[in-house]
Image (tube, rainbow, N blue to C red; front, side, top):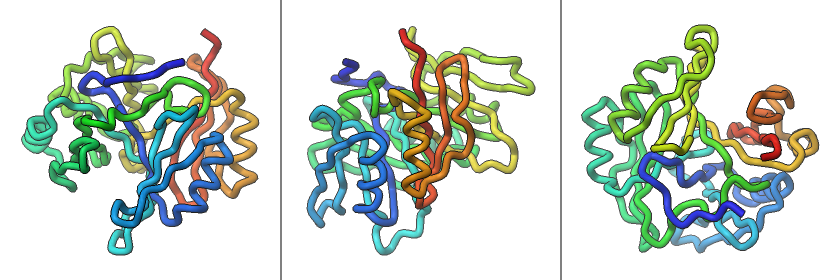
Length: 254
């Protein structure tokens, strides 16, 4: 069981879904991942913890009436000094959309758009460390930046955190880099086509990607491609019924 107690700075530590309708979203993702849900009160925006084996694995928050942001899965990178990381991001060309703020006793967060256009969150943990269970079936296993400007993205994120980049592929037709913190692979960066908006994509592990992909379609979601085999497992990028993208993967044993 891959339990987590803390995250090194620069590691994706949490994901949450901004959606239009909370209850249908809970039904959709609960049908895919067998999650249990703990929904907070109105004063906390009905923020909902998604749980597996009693541990927090993701969040869902309904879009507020004054918001017009599209439904999306948000990725948060851990930091030990949120204000300093935000200042570095600002100096490196990011647009800060949510300035550093305290979330009760849970932690401190900010949200920004990187210089290539990808939204990304930052989280300084207090009581809430992020996902307590990862890399198990029905939990978060990987986060991947898709951006048309790989060079600018690499430069930006390496200013924020001590990432080492491990190039995968030839860097031309297939430009993919693995981001490392020390010896740990923590995220990926893929160069996307120019017509694709830059975004971070979360991957959730499942026991059988083909069966879960079938459930996506049965519940009015869309399988965008695959399922298909890769060196890292069998995977399928998907879209929920409200337009939020995510991926599912069955990693190879071991």
